[in-house]
Image 1 (cartoon, helix red, strand yellow):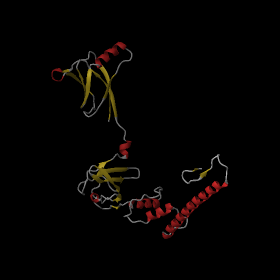
Image 2: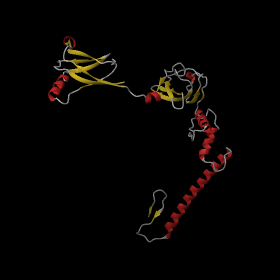
Image 3: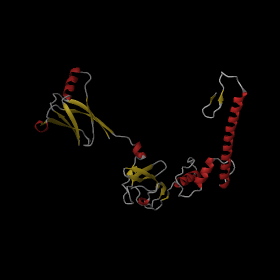
Image 4: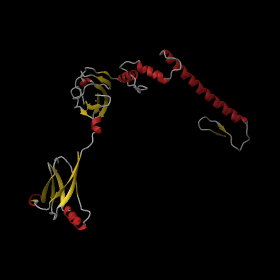
Length: 290
């Protein structure tokens, strides 16, 4: 007779006469398994009730209530424990959330030298603390372990809360010893993220005459076209401007543009280089994003 894979329940096939015996035996097996599950649940409930009683928690408290009690009543040396709930805006809720976070191996760094803090955790930092990021006042600091080649080192994340809307963030890493902290690096602030790029653009004309000959030295002719406000560090986009109404004229402009090998940004000018001189003036447009 075939049986089930996990609990060996009997599976009569249609080749034998049906008897109540296999069904009765299956019922006994199922009954025993259900009793085992029931006993386990009762044991769990009894153990949970004993824990709640020892903690002076009211009957009916959940496992989450037990965990929250442990968080609220543990010392600052408690291992990393994440609070059950961090939401809310009330002062009591915020204070409880802050206290829960400081149980994560951190504590109070008020007036301390931040160079001496390498233990992972969450810390409150006052204006009197030293070796803060330049320009930072007071705030909170998160210390985390960071893996690099050769070992695991602490990193510090400093949150300077100038207001509820603006928070500046810095980060630095230590590679061994209180005096081996790298410089603070400021991460993007809210102002940085909301700042818009500046777009500069305009039009000019590249003349076909009066090019400087440097063919003997580098193989190029060059011509500088003045662009007010252009910086040597800019990377302008340059493109020709055709009439769109005179095909013959546009063809000459295109041929002249094909002579240009490159364009370089310099202070106040764009320098065009060519190996063959253009035969007509080339109107062009330029654009710079800063």
